[in-house]
Length: 248
Image (tube, rainbow, N blue to C red; front, side):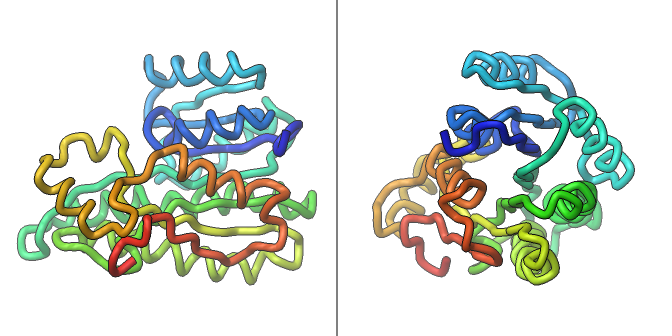
């Protein structure tokens, strides 16, 4: 097992890509601390799924946009699990609009949920990883942060910011054997994309050389590469996980 006896924190893991990452890591023997905005039926269901794979798992209700909340969360995880080896910054939202109609609230909500959360969580785990002299952080960005997209200036800015943050932290953390990389998914089938009209889905697929959307498990496999011994000489990387999507 690639992650046996390791502990991962995964944000936004009650559904979609985050849930897939948690399950994939658990299959490799990793104990999982994960969080969502509230402790609800979805969180309990994921806890049970993970526990059924034979690992320790616990979900926490955390607002990852709040600095002190993330500090308290990580301390609690260390108290509950003993240590931290991996952080996956996956939490994110969309609130799309053309710039001429976008409100300040829409801008702030997306930047906080997608980008400030990465700062808060990385800052919170930093002293623990620094002290032990090892660790891996995987940030979930997007091809939209590379190529942009119509009506998504807030989302594109937040995901581009994650890429810059990843590059900077790789330089800061490398001397302590802490690796930090980013995965930039393209069109991935999740609950978030479920409401997209079928005609628009077909259009997106015509722009993908592989002629299909990706899956959450494929994103999880990319994260597993960076989190495990498979990727021990990778830091500051951006993996374009998009089937060759144009402009990615």
